[in-house]
Image (cartoon, rainbow, N blue to C red):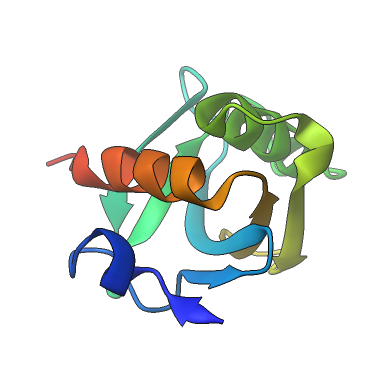
Length: 115
């Protein structure tokens, strides 16, 4: 296992990890948003923000998060799994795919800071 920030810069939290064929990313979910999107960071250490229109009821927001992350990283929804925080706004997700492409996209998404 290697740390992400050694790959794409120190602005990415060390909580984001690379494993065989997958990366693990810390996210903050914003349910009931006006639109679905993955953008910027929040908190300390920085977490990727995932805004979804779905309410945080009966797993609807989690399902929407999985679909939105998959679209943002260019993978299929079944390649995205919530590994921690299913009932919380702060979650840890695992994304399977080409590591270099995932790390590059993670850097792009976390670099778009929202003020």
